[in-house]
Amino acid sequence: MIHKKIVFGLFVLFFLGACTAPTAMLGPAYTFSSTGSLAQAGLSYGSNEIITSYTGKTPIENLEEITSKNLSAKNNIQKRTLESDDFHQLVKKRIDDTRGKIKLINQ
Image (cartoon, rainbow, N blue to C red; front, side, top):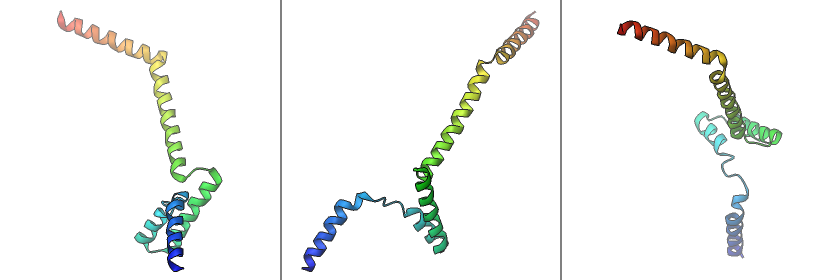
């Protein structure tokens, strides 16, 4: 009878083990091992769960979204700068000044 329970338990553990997030406790376990504080580990796990239930995304996914928004905003500023008329006039003026200096040197 005990062997049947062990086999059944291993069977359930093997097939249903992927239904949970096994890495969900990895962060709090690291926190507990490095600080030794069960309260900090519990707070870490609890805050992660609250963020996930509130936003529907894990804290890492939220962080990736924030950084991608910042990068896209930065790229848009650079694109607008390169396409602006002021930038075009500045570059053209610099090229003309450089040509003038080269002509003076070559005379």
